[in-house]
Every structure is written in structure tokens, then in C-alpha cells.
Amino acid sequence: MKLKLTNLARSFGEHKALDGVTFEVENCGALVFIGPSGGGKSTLLRILAGLEKPDSGEVQINGERLVFEEQRLQQHRRKIGVVFQGFNLFPHLSAVENIELPLTAVHGHSPAQAREVSMELLRRFQLAAHADKKPAALSGGQKQRIAIARALAVQPQMLLLDEPTSALDPAMTAEVLETIELLKDQGRDFILATHEMGFARKVADQVAFIAEGKLVELGAPGAVFGETALGETRRFLERVLRW
Image 1: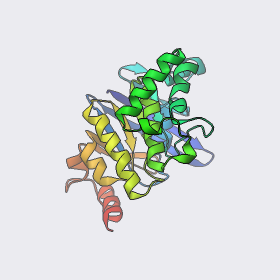
Image 2: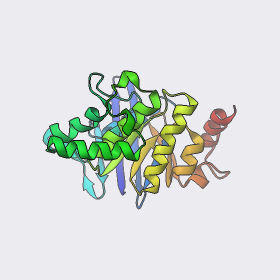
Image 3: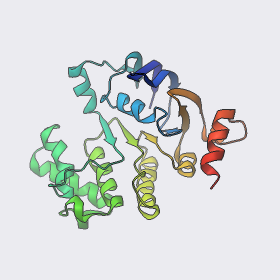
Image 4: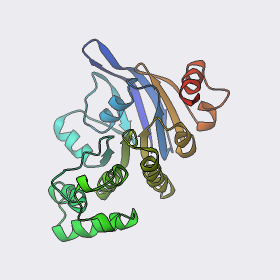
């Protein structure tokens, strides 16, 4: 994955969610965003997904400039898989039907093709036994893993994960983190926003610390989590890792 952001800005009223974010990464399989809540991580992910338009600035993904015009954004969204913290599964559809829907409705798969792809993903994530269950009958960890499977079903250029474990208890969190680690082992490109600092350090190729709408620090996990980290980064990590 190659990603270049130049002077990216986005405000909501008086609040500057992003304030001139500029950075570039190359040959990066796993980019992890860390930082305080409300610091701009989710807004940045939504812009990268083509779900939010910046007020100014430029985004390049794998050398291609992201054009924030609706027709071009629709094309871009088809190449990106997004997993939100709230699962976003359709409650009236079964697990397998939730995965099938974007394949048939957006990507032109036949029902038979969509079923084959969906069941293969459920088997890969050890969820085949739950294929016919609706979200209400699933645990939080199972729902989030199905959301990840749905995002992967469309063969995305990259996967964006916004705090995918924030609503889960420790056991369910472990389920989802193991699934994300599997994606890393399979060579999938992804960008992850997380408060799981130990996992961020383990899985990331590059870590971006984002606070108050600004990029504070970008570097390898050993640097960002190490003694050479900038003062603001160290203070944040000391607070979140204290307990």
C-alpha cells in the first residue's frame, strides 16, 4: 500500500476534525492509527473510504488521486472494504445473506456465485455453522468477524477498520484481533484505528499518532512505542498503558 495525504482538512462547524494532515507511507501493509478519542482518526478513515469529503487537501492511494466527485467516489467505494465499530449488519438478514448482499447488489455476482464466495469466507473464519443465523442470535465477536468477511468478499484494494473492537468484551476482542492478525499473515493491506496498543505494536508496519486533528508522529512501531517517541506520544501512551 502506498498512501499520500497533503494538507488534509475537515471541519464540522467550529471543530477542526482534521487540521492540515500531511504524511506519506510506501510499501506498508498495515498502517495503524492511534490517539485519543475525537482526535480525527475516524474522520480520516471516512475520507479514505470515500464516505466523507475533505474541505481541502489531497489524497493519493497507490499513486492514484482520490477525486471527491460522486461518480468517482462510487467507483472508489467499490474498491474499499470498510468495517465500523458498530458492525452495521442488516438485522433482518442472516449472516450469509449479509455477506451476499453487496456482491449481488453492487458487484454483479449471480446468487450462486455470491453464496459460494460468502460460504468460503464463513468457513475461513470458522463461522459456517452460523451462516443462517440473524445478527440477534450472534455474539459481538461473531458479528464483527462477519462484518470483516463481508468487507473482504468484494476483494477490496484495501481494508479500513474503525475501532472494530470498541464495543466488545475481552474474549470477543481477542476473536476479532486474531482475525485481523490472520489478514496480516495473508498479506492483506489494511488501515486500522484502534485503542488496543499492544496489538497495534504487534501488527503495524507503520503507526500514526493523531491528536487534535493533527499528525503528531509517524513511524515504525519500535520508534513510536519506544523511548525515542515524541513527548506528546509518550505522554499519551503512559496514560493509556498506566492501568
